Every structure is written in C-alpha cells, then in structure tokens.
Image (cartoon, rainbow, N blue to C red; front, side, top):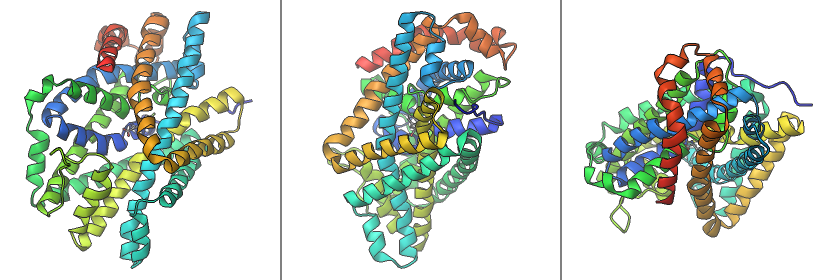
Length: 446
Ligand code: PFF
C-alpha cells in the first residue's frame, strides 16, 4: 500500500514551498508586463484588490480542504462531498485539475528550458566557448528539446525525494536565494541611465484604463495563475501542513509573499526595459506597446545585458538564475499534484510515480516543441484562461455549497482556536459562497 504521507516540518518550510509554487514566471515575467500594458499603477491597484479579495479566499479554500482531508486532490474533494452526485462531481473536478496541471507543466517546462539555456549562455561566453553560446541562444527544436528534458529531470529528481527531503528542502534553499538575487538586481538596475523612466511607466497610474474590461480580466487571470489556483497544487501542499498551524495567517503570508515578489519584479523588469531603450535596444512592438511576449525575456533583456560589457555577463547570469529558480519551485508543485494521486490512489512508489508522470509530461512537452506554432498558444489558452478559472470556481462551490460549514470551522480551529470570533470567519465564508463564484464567472465571460 501507499507509503505514509509527508508533512512540512515547520511554518517556514511550508511558506517557502507554497510561495515557491506561487512565485514563478508569472510573477517575474507576467506581472510586470501586464502592469506596463494596462495603465501601470492602475493595474497594480486593481491587482492588489483582486488578489486579496478573490484569490486569497480561493487559496484558503484549497488549503483548508487539503489539510482537512490529508489527501490528493481527487480523494480530498470526494471526502468533503456528502452525496453520490457530488462525489462524481468531485471526481470530475479533481481529474480535470490533474490533467490541467499536467498540461500547464508541459508548456512551463519549455519556457523554463529557455531560461536554463540563457543561463548557460553567459557561462559559455565567459569560458570562451562562443560556438556553444551561439547554439544556446539560437531558437531551434533540438535546443528546446534538450533543455525540456534537463528541466524535467531536475523536477523529477526533487519530487522523488519526497515532501521534506525534496520539496521543503529545495524550496527553503532556493526561495531565499531568489529574493536576494532579485533585490541585488533591482539595486543595480536602478542606478543605470533610463531606469527612472521605467519606474514612471510602472508606478505612475493611468486611471483612465481602470474602466477597461481587459484590465480586469488580465488582473484576475494573473492573480489566479500567480497563486497556482484551481488545479490542486495548493490543496496538495495544504495536505502537508501540520494540524497545529494557523491556516488563515499562513495562507495570508503566502499571498503576501507572492504579491510582494510580483510588485518587486516590476521594479526590475520595467526599469531594465527603459535602460535597454536608453542603450538603443527596441522595446516597443509594431503597435507601439511594450514588447511583452517571449521577445522580452529572450531578446530585449539579453540585448541589454550585451550592452553592459563584462558586468553584463554577471547580470545575465544572475537574472537567468533567478528565472530558473522561480520556474523550478513552481514546476515541482505542479508535478506533485499527479504524483500524490498516483502514490495514494494506486499505491505506486513515489520515485516510480515521479519518473513515469515526469516522462509523460516530457513527451507532451516534446510534442509541443515539435509543433510549436499551432500547439503552444492553444495549450496556454485552454489551460490558463479556460480551465483554471472554471476550476477555481468549482473549488469555491465545493467549499461553500457542498462541504458542511461546521466541518470547515472545526478544521480552521485546529490551529487557530479563536478563529470563530476572528475577522476571517466573519468575511471569508460569505466571500467564497457568493462573491468569488460570481466574480469569477463575470470575468470569465468577459
Ligand atoms: N504560480 C506560477 C507562476 O506564477 O508562474 C504558475 C503555476 C504554478 C501555475 C503551479 C499553476 C500551478 F499549479
């Protein structure tokens, strides 16, 4: 039968793991560019409201279900469903989450592979291997395939080691390093000519765009993707939290860390883009907007680093190390969702489950690499814009309409005995019952 379940050894361990899942390419790449193209600080303002008012309650829903059930997503949703019909719905939602997260990981691994390739590029140049550097930074199927395999191998390696020795240990090493590298890069970039224009583009609000529906849709999509919601990741991490832990506070800290790192990343990316502009690099696309897609990370920023001379080599190393760490702490949380299911439901050994599922994800990634143009955008759209918000909606319904209110309170009170009198219990049930589902649907149908 299945091995005994893992548990995070401390609040710090959980915080690093869960914020590691949340902080990823979505924060460092997605958030700053979304902000820049949606009215700067106006986006920030809406994002902060949505993140705390909608994403945080949805995050709490997953953490509470997970810790209550101490099980993978499918089993956990079934255990809070009292009737036959709701048990079937639980199965459908749980499996859709597992399939969605598998596909998210398959495209995430491709982009993460680029980050590793661009990390090796300055190293190769430093060591005088110009030809290798050229290969690393030239868009090609073979390069993408090689780095997908490498990235997935590292992800499988960490997940095979388990909750404490794999996820917690690595997240506790990598997340503090990420924060230090990010702050050092910000401090350096802000000293360069042009940086202040970038700060202005980021921090001066253009409130005329607040009424723009795309701003709301973008801000909500960003908040859900960034907090890794809807696909069972936070539910599974929640299932490894100790029963002594105060859930509302711990979940609040995860949201706060995620949001803070996104906001900090804006202080790096936008100033860096305007420094690039001051150095003669093109940062606007043909429609006059800031370049935001892959071009930003793999052409604008490397072009900037190239204008910086020797120091640029070290800045490039630091930047792509930051991106690689951010990707890795997110990818392990994605792989954990199907692995936890395979271990607990099918009694598979953890390392075997990680290897088998990791290989399946790698095969899907390679299929996308070989058919990039038709497939990549479709996979991103279906998983993050269609499936993820609908699953977030389903999780709210399960917690607020299907699960018994008393059981929820009992679960929260385990680590927070005074919770019944606290602000969280006064507001949160109403939020997940009415505000979150309605808001998610409105934004979804926009
Ligand atoms: N939150 C991650 C990011 O912002 O890049 C992405 C992510 C991780 C999405 C885990 C979904 C997931 F299950």
